[in-house]
Length: 294
Image (cartoon, rainbow, N blue to C red):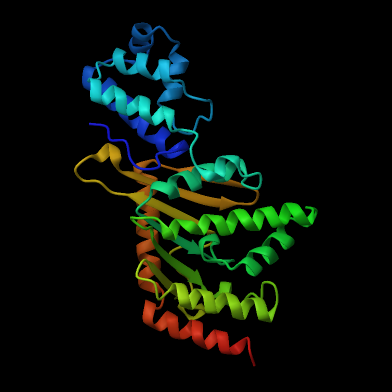
């Protein structure tokens, strides 16, 4: 019923815990109050374990008591307890330059099968070169010390190791043409960045499309950068995951309600149909690269 997946750290594991507990409780027809009484905990504790965005530390004994209260089998109980044991894994947990708001994104990314990104202002972090990332942080964090900015760049580049894992992450990006026209870091940095985009687009696990200015109004409307992270497991729905991350200034918003996630998936599908296809986008990248070397 509940499957422990590779790298089920932090919020990704918490989502599985929340779904697993809710499923167990529903199976035996108990309310949160009834589970709390059986487990010897407060209703607030039951609610906290069923809410993945709560950052309070989960405890193995409490997890075991809740699973027992819901009539979990031995294997179901061990799977849930195992998720609690793994909740603090992940390189980003100890990296000083990874803000708290990014913890869930990196956790979900660590176990996602695919990531769909709409970028309307900057190249997405997974595709940035070190010099481009440096220019971005120097502009965004104008009061930060040089060593702090260097640490931020290190974290951003370290995140790109996700492409080296097996099975790998499939990244699909729709770039607004404005991203290619904004000279972040200057001409040399942009030329290098576009070369990198072109090289990454040659990888089988990376698709890049450009949304041309000529398209006019498009499916994303006036909305900004968003990320859809997913893993689909038809054999075990509890092992599936779908989350939307909305990037805001100095903070982020995570959506996991099925209706909201589906709305963003549909929006991304429309954006892919409105953008130039991958072959035409590769030619556009090459043409734009030439403009930065004239």
